[in-house]
Image (tube, rainbow, N blue to C red; front, side, top):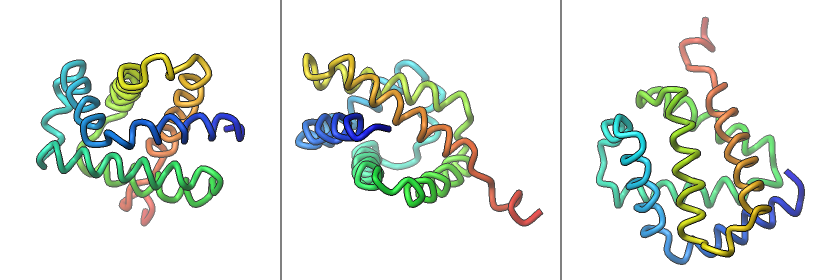
Length: 140
């Protein structure tokens, strides 16, 4: 990602962060509407899950200038998600729900450039999470 892309992602997220739980709940509502099978993956209260999502995004965005550290974080997150039963096709649904939530929440501030930056970021994050090895594969 370019420095401009990083700035766009961070500034748009800062706007969302002021309404973080509301925004994350909107994301999950959209995800469960467009991909109902994902609902069964969440055992906790959605409010608690919403807080976890926003915390994880906050940490990931803070690490955008440290790609190595971010990749380690995302690989671990990918392993956990695989253990929760997340399948590769779920990542596409999550990406679509994320972009919809950003567009809905940011309105006119969700410019073409901002969309492109978030699309690039989510694509990189999903690719890293999907390629994470499971513990059993590592020890084989």
